[in-house]
Image 1 (tube, one colour):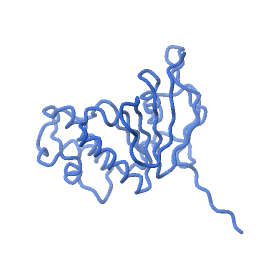
Image 2 (cartoon, helix red, strand yellow; image 1 turned 90 degrees about the vertical axis):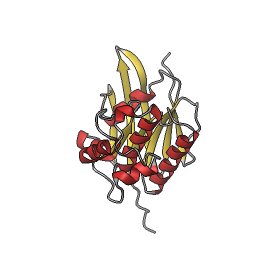
Image 3 (cartoon, helix red, strand yellow; image 1 turned 90 degrees about the horizontal axis):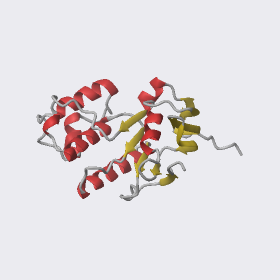
Length: 213
């Protein structure tokens, strides 16, 4: 009987370690994320959750270890194509409208062919705010606009740093629905949390981080 073909995980980290001012922040860490699942990165403030996501996204350089995407070494161009990062800051241009921000970001990072910027605003509950300047939006509205940008991204791997912050219960359910749909389409997600919110109701594994002693 022929062997069943195996596929590499969407993301694999081996021996990943990061220090700051000669003090350990996390690691060494070994983990994988497969398509169709979420890895929940859990830990208290200062445990290195944000640092880990920034290192995966290529915004910080780890001291040791290797990151692979679909079995290939994660060089800059491959990360830009495969990863969509949602951080604490909204990453919006204050003097552009909501719609202009989405179109600008789609021009930089691409767009899923079946989606439109106007449609994404409707999905996140921002219909009617197309012409509102980003600087006029509330923190929750900026988060929803950032979620619309995430929804438009063609990247298969979402890196979500505290995605429930600044959202009401309806917004939390929106994030959960988005993650569910993304996983159904063959994507994957890393989600950081300090434990204040439940994990998305999807196939989930846990990566606990602890503050260095």
